[in-house]
Length: 233
Image (tube, rainbow, N blue to C red; front, side, top):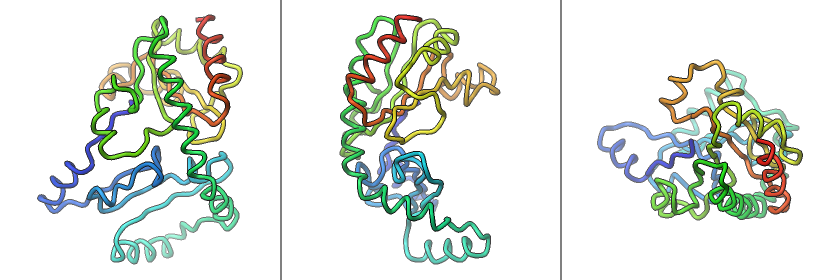
């Protein structure tokens, strides 16, 4: 649902109550946001996403103080959750282009968000880089970019959402994110289809919500694809 939390404010509450704060920084990566500097105790990343960057490796990262990493290392060793050498190699390659990719993801997402915000068939666009986003100021305060993830609500509900994803040609229908290719999914009929409508609405997922992981293709190509698909809705 693209909600942005005020990490510094939450960190202060957590500290006052002797609670460790864990932040999932997958969407923004260290390039756009550094939660440890904002007061978080532990930062996690699904390295499968933007860090690897090409939908070709599986892994995760947990970062924190020396005392935390020493304990985490022992736990990892005892449980056997060891990253494969091949996936580790893929990720070391991906990290080298992370700044270049994140800048392009961010640039493209902003262009697409602005296009969708003006489209007659779109009810609402959720992207932290837009001034219309409820937590725009919070995002601007704690991050240097808004990343490549956005969501939008299409008019017409669940059937309109299905029709849109069935008619895209360039965008890839997939539940993953962070790839160099633009990935699209309709949560109500895909990832959250087994959850009742009432439960989905409680967490902000409407029938017409579509999630877009914007890639690094030419932004106009992505916009043209969305435009032709929207005409068929």
